[in-house]
Amino acid sequence: MKPIQFNDLGAQYAALKEDIDKAIANVIAGAHFISGPQVEELEKALCDYTGRKYCVTCASGTDALHLPLMAMGVGPGDAVFVPAFTFYASSEVVSLCGATPVFVDSLPDTYDIDPDDLLKKIAAVKAEGKLNPRGIIAVDLFGLPADFTCLEPIAKENGLFLLEDAAQGFGGKIGARHACSFGDVSATSFFPAKALGCYGDGGAVFTDDEEMYKLLLSLRVHGKGSMKYDNIRVGLNSRLDTLQAAILLPKLSAFDVENAHRNGAAEKYAFQLKDHFAVPVIPEGFHSSFGYYTLRAKDEAQRTRAMDALKAAGVPSIIYYPRPLHLQKVYAPLGYKEGDLPVAETLSKTVFSLPMHGYITDEEIDYICGVLTGVE
Image (tube, rainbow, N blue to C red; front, side, top):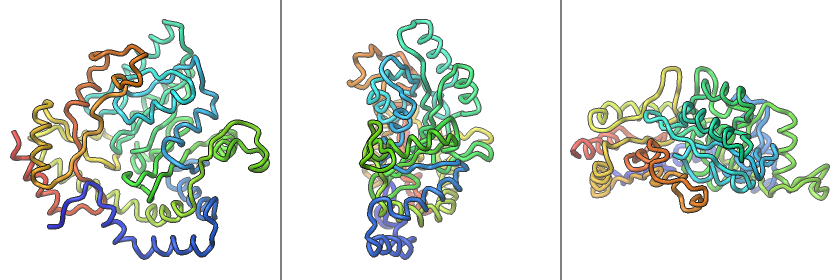
C-alpha cells in the first residue's frame, strides 16, 4: 500500500489531469491572468450549484469573510457572535474591522455553534450595554452546516445579520438547501485542503442581495467606482486569479462524485470505529460534505494514544483545533478564562481528524481503523 495522505491531492489530480491541464493551458494561451473569462464562468457555476443569485470570488477564504463585514460597515463598538471552536479567521475578520468578537460555545455532538448559548450571549451583551450587537458568524464545521433552522430565526428576531462561514461546508446541505445559501451572506474558501480546493489561496462570497453584490464587486478591487482608477471607498486587493478559477471548474464538475465517495468513506469509518470513539453525528435532514473526518476521544489521554499509534503506523492525523479562540493569546484582553466555554474547551482536548478525501480507498480505511481499534 502506498503512503497514506491526509488529503490526497495527487490522486485527485491524476483523476482530473486531462481537464485540469487543458484548463491551465487555455489560461496561459489566452494570457488573461487577472479577471479572465474563467472567473466569471466559475462564479456563475457556483451560483448554479449553491442556489444563490450572486457570487463574488476573491483571493482567500479570510477575505471572503472580511469583505461582507466591510460591506455592512461593521466597526468599533459592534459585537459579532462567533463560535469559539473554529479556525482563527472566523474571529480575526471581526477584529480587523475594529469590532469585538463575542465567543459562543459549541454543541457537544455536531461541534457547531450552540443556538441556546448564542441566545444567552446576545442577552448578556444587550444587558451590559457596552457593545452594539450587530451579527452572527456561524461556521459549518468539518463539512456539516450549522443549524440554520434555529440560527436564521434568532438573527431575525434580534435584528442581527447572519454570515455563514462555509469555508469547510461547501457541499453540505440542510434539506434541499446547499451550504453557502444560508443567512444574509455566506463565504467559502478554496484553500487546497478544502473539499473544493484550488492550487493556492482563493475564496468566494455569496448573497441574494443585489446592493451587497455591487458593494462586494467594488470592495474586492480597491473600492473602485466606474473603473479601477476611480476609487470611491476603501477596499482590498482581493481578486481570484484566473488560473485558480480555471482549476476549480473541472474540480467543481467532479465535486458531487467526490462528495458521495467521502460520505461512503465516512460510513465505513463509523461502522468500524463507533464502539471505540465518538463518530460524527449528522442530524436528520442534514448532509455533511465530510471535508474532514473528525473523531472525539473519551479524554485527552486516549487521543494522545490514538494519534501516537497512527503516527507509528505511518498514518497522518491532525487536531482541529487544539486551543479554542477565546483562550488564544490575542484575545487575552477580552478577559475570557478557562471554563467559560466548557464544550469548546473539551472538544479542543479530545477531537482529532483522520485522512479523508474523494479518492481514499477501502484498503486505507481498513488499515487506519485496524490501528485505532487496537487503542484503549
